[in-house]
Image (cartoon, rainbow, N blue to C red; front, top):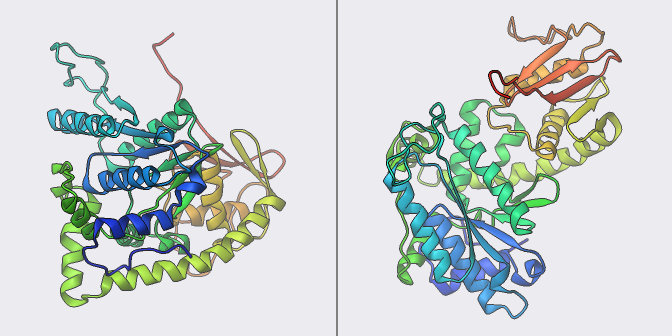
Length: 380
């Protein structure tokens, strides 16, 4: 098990944070592959970059030249978003690492200093899931363009707690109680790694203050319009007032559930090997009995394999897909489950899923899952 900062640890000296980080993400293990560090300009991502630079700089096996910094400017806060972009650019220049950036200009109001509209298309969606999907699409492009194999993001132990609560209220299966995985594959040959999951925000900010490293504060983090901000700013303080050790208890739950989930993942991989055919863009599933728990984990594996978004995939979608896979006849009628609410059955030959995905029964009686692209009209 990798050493990590205790979940309830207070401020730690920067040298100790560096030691713990180097044990969590050994530079010598990643020396031969390029890494991209996602940096928003906030405290957590700035701490991640500083820890990587310090760890790589102290290791004779690693090279600073293998590091690239990636920043996506959503443009949702106008001039402040642009200032974040410049801050991260300056930070990358200070440490002589490659800087890759992109700006979302898809809004009639946005200009590029000349007063002219750069891309007069309909305003972009600013909900959390849409922003995240755009950002990760950019990060995947960064990996491909830089020749790197590994993407680092700055999710912390606090993000673990907030994510579990978010999953719980949204309606999650057992895998959602595992929180954020330490690493997972993205696209074909790339790996997403989250080396700060064993660290707390308080410790990282204290370390940055100790070494005099500034960061940017995102005003949108104050708005409880976003559900995660509401959990962070409203719900968690209320919970702490009654259960001071609640966050430590949640982190222990995540650790325990992760061990159970690993056992399920082994079964899910076996089921995929026996019952699923993976084409470049299509999953074909042999229909038949499978436990809902195993299929739920398998869904996550398949979605990650294809790079399909699963933020909006909730427990109801899992249930309906399970019914479609287990249904016993060719017209898709599902097996009625005891206690099942009326209208929650998969009674047709197809099921629309978030992310423009569709699962349907084919002429051979199997299930085919693929992405459906909307037709473009009025364009050549």
